[in-house]
Length: 318
Image (tube, rainbow, N blue to C red; front, side, top):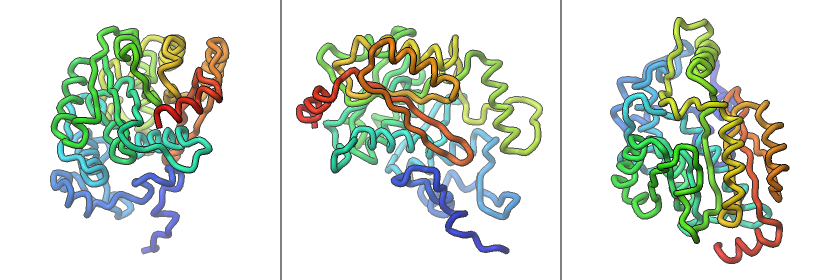
């Protein structure tokens, strides 16, 4: 059998600081989380893997990754809720760290750095990774009460998160910051993983395409193997409408946040988003590309603070 090269072992498109650049070490992962063992078996290439079409296997893998790499002692999600791929979520966090660093010598770390996770979901992934990697604090919001209950349980049962993550229910379904920010509260960044699709039909169509690419044949039906509730996967107008509404509302909180950010799944969404950011007079806009496997993803960042205000922000808060 041909020996794997370093290039085979390294997922070079992932962020240089990512803990997931190498192939999964299933022996170590099983040691951290024995519940993963029944789901691990050789794939058609003879490598150990899990069946990514099996939601239970994906959940077990995520549990193991969070325990092994991020020191989580408890993690669980309700049935059918989104179970996101950990490497991509970690890349978003690492790239936000670079965004905050700017041209400074070091990445700002510690609990004084605070982020807002808009739509934390039942999984609470971003606060877990951001706190472990950089010691950041988080506000984590969601409109779904079941997701809030789950995220709160994760925080309460992990002592390191308990004093660093504030779970807040967003009672207004069409709001992002209103009702979440206190009057004088400031955050250094926001992040968001928007519902990408405009309808259930669109979500299923995308899932079929993804499964076909993975499996090499067309499946009979869409299996949302990473789960997800309606509000996690689709919304009226899709991500373009969602991000547009977020940008318009962010104007009212421009002095309370250094960098607003959001993932953008579809490249076609970028052009209209730039026009909206120009319309609301954002001071600076950045698009940061990220790569996971064959997929290129990105997030957009904007601020209403000019260069002098950004410097003053860092001096005051960091």
